[in-house]
Length: 246
Image (cartoon, rainbow, N blue to C red; front, top):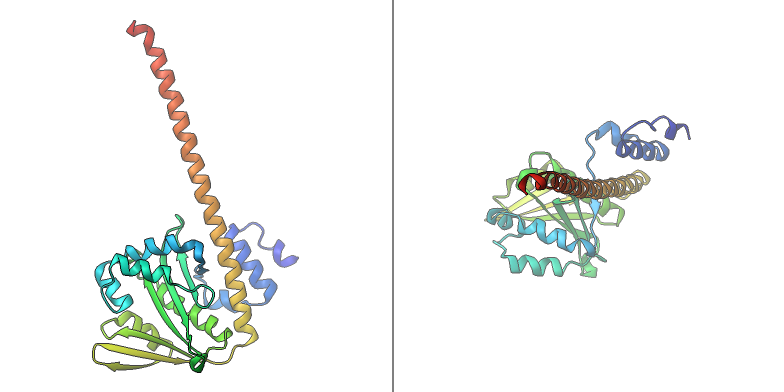
């Protein structure tokens, strides 16, 4: 209870974040990651947001993300074919609820490789330079560990330096074969800390999303009220001039 009372005067997002961290004892998150970002799990109802995100990628960005210059139609088939029950798809929303970063953690469908998963990510050009690609990869590592994955790999074009640097920074082994590269990262077994961190981040991200949704609805309401007030003012002004016109 003291943990909750001590943060009651903070911003709602900070309030929930600090309260959850203190109550679960996951204090290392704030100590090591003061610039927490809300990474939220995506579901089938977000397909429209995902389409908008991927279609906003420039031709070169699509080429780096998919390994080929994906057309709008091909992106549509990719989004329609996503398996939300098997894979983990997640992203970052801005305050306007636009999906500005998206990642796909795909688990193997072959029982022989059931402990393997592949990672892919895309970040809109205007949202780069914030380290979100690396943070999304870290999120994937934690989730994959907790799902029993022992080998996480990235298939990328050799010219995709940003993605390969993220993999190398995490300790992955990168093997180049001409224009393509493979990065392999061995994952340790899940621990109580990794599971708690995942739960805390999911809770905080959900609260952040709900706050953004409420704020967007409130801004929409304010806009409607402003339009109504402006309409009333215009009507009054028009009415006050009618006698003169007569």
